[in-house]
Image (cartoon, rainbow, N blue to C red; front, side, top):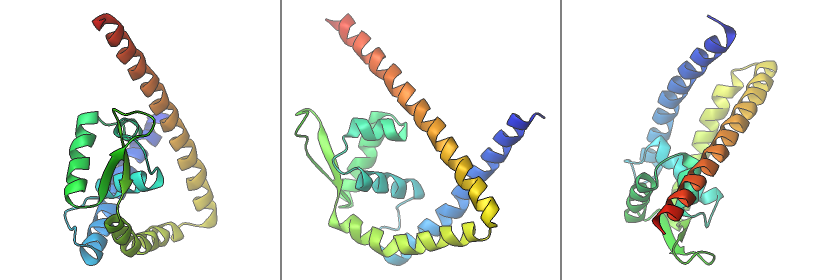
Length: 169
């Protein structure tokens, strides 16, 4: 097996293991600190994304998450029912809405994040400083590559949308 395939295998194992571990930590903390025990790790990620990019549109959130607009819309409806997200008119595009988290999400976040960050820090703290540096460099590079792919995919989607719009006229 070549080095790239070996790294791909390690990455796949790491993603699955991290997902299982973080799912358990997030789930336990959300049950302990919130009235939303049905929130999953991915929900936590989506809500944090909205919080960090307040005013983001559903389309931009869909692109950022790499998910279909309809899937993200369904998730947002659930978050709205739970009182965690609100939709407001978008000042720049009257057809779109701007997303923001509510005070209820801020409460969930404030009570859960310190425990979650402590769990992350505990795991990373088990690594040597050298290993932490390698991990930081590797993950930073991987995120960059993934963001470049996402940007490229978004440009391709926009080109397809424009072509379809031109054909329908």
